[in-house]
Length: 165
Image (tube, rainbow, N blue to C red):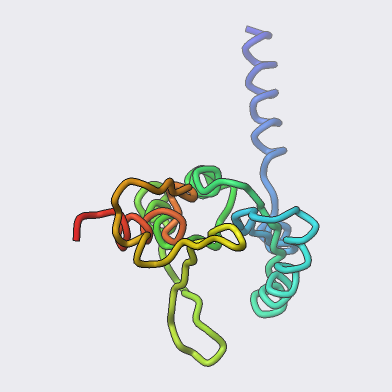
């Protein structure tokens, strides 16, 4: 009986210790913001810090960057509430909506307000490869695809160059 009483008191104390006053939770609100890491972390910090500072100023939230080198980690981070917002490409964004119950609330535009999406195909300097040769699709060329979840690195080239016309 005494053991049960001690266990009950211990459970109660543990439960109360995890409680906090509502103002404590509001004193330092924070969200984690995910970004695909395509460069070194210190370079990303330089690029993203101005946006995070603007977000802090406008929302009052502390923004904690969450960098990862693949889309799956970013999506799963959102799915398991390790991140609360993020910057996603089109395909990864759709996956975040489906798997992590995400919602699109903004999209990027050029400074003049024009919407657009651009990808490029890169060949070695001095290459004689032409667009006509690429479009010909005669299986004489090799193509290095990007991330399978990337719109510009995989979906656009597949759609425009490698699917039957």
